[in-house]
Length: 448
Image (cartoon, rainbow, N blue to C red; front, side, top):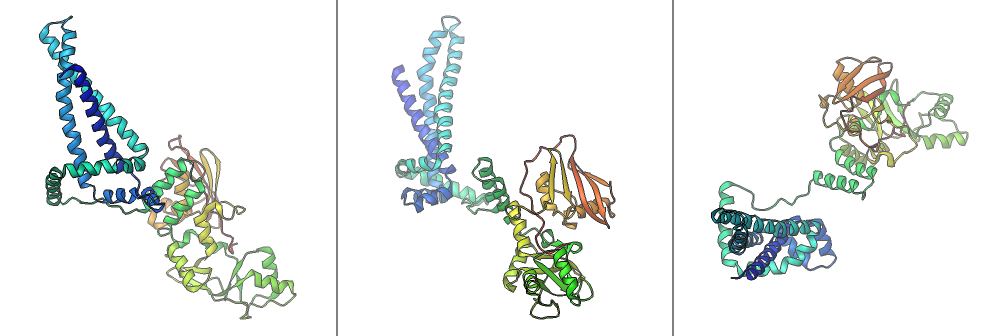
């Protein structure tokens, strides 16, 4: 075989090997969601690719047979094609024995490099760039190869199946899409500019609803504006003007004895019509939904749906009121700054390395803003104030500070044992500055 013939044969072998490499990577990288979309649009090839992905054994067996056979044949042909030519060139400047050895090494490196570049790297990059289109384009030739190599495919397939069963390995790829998969795709979409950051955060919040408790969305006990059932007309009118909220709990004796709630619109209507306001009037009073403080946000929404209510009183295990929550509160937690943009923010970024955070801020939102994956004893608290109490093992005082994960949490203001403001500062630039995220807003529900 002449040098020219050997070169043509090597080029042909590289092309065939590249075909198998491209077929392999395109099938593996083809996105099932994209293939389903193409199938729905009427492309008849997409369902075949989906079926091949579900049972890829024969397909990949043919790929490996072809690639390994071509690699061996390419080495034999390449050594015979280039080694004599290179040896002859090297003999002009060195001993024949040394020239022969060096010519063989150079011939091996040349053939190997050609195969790596043109039968592996280039085809696989092309396959990764447009996997669905190439997988559908190469499907028919690969089906022909499977038919032609059927005996070998059957033998190797049975041996492989036996080894998998013997070792207890999974036979099929798990195609279930998890929440982590969806979040990873949305984060990639955000980085690519397809999704806005606040939209990506909404999606992430939806998947957090099962793990976030209702206490992270409620209006806390000390912020509730409520009426006593015996309050006179003048006091009710004054309270409405001073604290204009959409809903007010109605109690007897104190906040822990809630008998119902009133809508502000009903009170306003009576006030505008100069009608007397009495909370003993059953027409004004609505029955309050009472829920435990250990419910998740998902369970809270289900409670609202079953009761056909959008207002609930949250109680602890001692039947003491710890807060109130509305459907709007839950949705504001999920939607972030897409809802209630005029409300006061719980987290305010002062500069690239510091934040002023309200003590009642849900600890999940603090972790998201600061990009802290884990906090100690996280099961013992729901808010930033709770985190500080657990870390200090006492009620925090002004100027108390806790350092964790490269951040300093310093108490700036305390009002009657309630932590109003916490200054969080990044220490020594140890953590990469996060971009401003979607921050939950304080609820528009009744609060003091």
